[in-house]
Image (cartoon, rainbow, N blue to C red; front, side, top):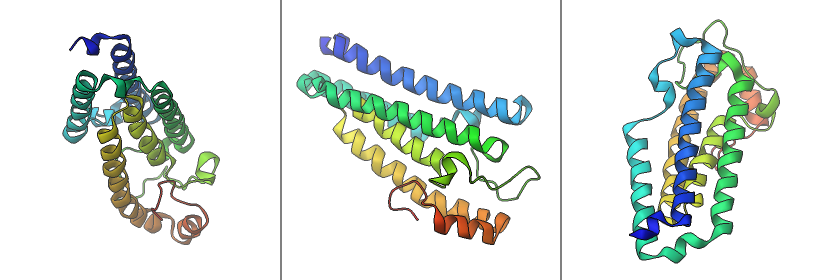
Length: 197
């Protein structure tokens, strides 16, 4: 059990908790900066029961593996690759949010608002859903950084599936809002989530 308090355990768990705190705090702060405090709720922290459970399970996996298979957590090149994924995922997601400005919301809009515009510049020139791509990279990166093989695969599958269902739903409304302009944009630019058109 002392492995949890080793340099490896301390470093990896600290990095994970800092990544989680930074991700959620920055999401909330950006939402307030873009939309104003009166229009932002705690849901902008993006912490659901399922998400909290997934993170708890990943920590339990980490603890079990560091106790029973401590060598598994010593692959620093894998852990550092995961940390790089976290950073790149954060940068991509936050760049997407800042680029979209008021057109970005955490909840899918089913009615077009006055300020809502189709954003096709910046990172949106290379992918339609860079914030989703960023979150996918970030979330899987948290598990790669911990050298959690089970959670890394589970996070990749679950998050990918979530976006594979969410993107068509969201794009249904985007096509209603922007018509042919969005259809042409979608034909020209990939979604940013692998295997999701």
